[in-house]
Length: 152
Ligand SMILES: [Zn+2]
Image (cartoon, rainbow, N blue to C red; front, side, top):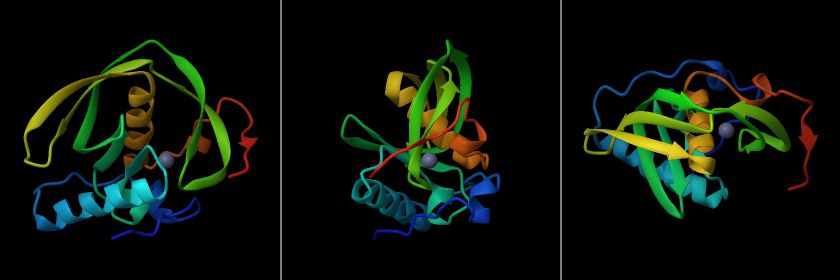
């Protein structure tokens, strides 16, 4: 099911999302719907608050393979880079954001197993962007320069 994407100004985007305590059928359905919504919207990542669920779940399109991360947490950060980012919840602009170049993070998979991941490049940037959503942070909150207007 394709879900409605919440846009900047919606209070749910400013709230710290809650930890997922139990990966039940409802959570699994939400993850499937998030992946469908991300693909439909041509996004590279999506966080649960963006579809109106204040839960610590993100999905990422990694080399055309969708992955879900539950209760993700960054453990290590290395390097720094500034790049323009867009966001499905902040349409029409791209914003330069400073982030770590590579990260180590842990998260639960859909079976509840905790795994550790090393991410660099775009994958690292997308993970950091989506985890920001779980903490109520948007790209406009972290812009290092003026946003760029883009035509979509
Ligand atoms: Zn976003």
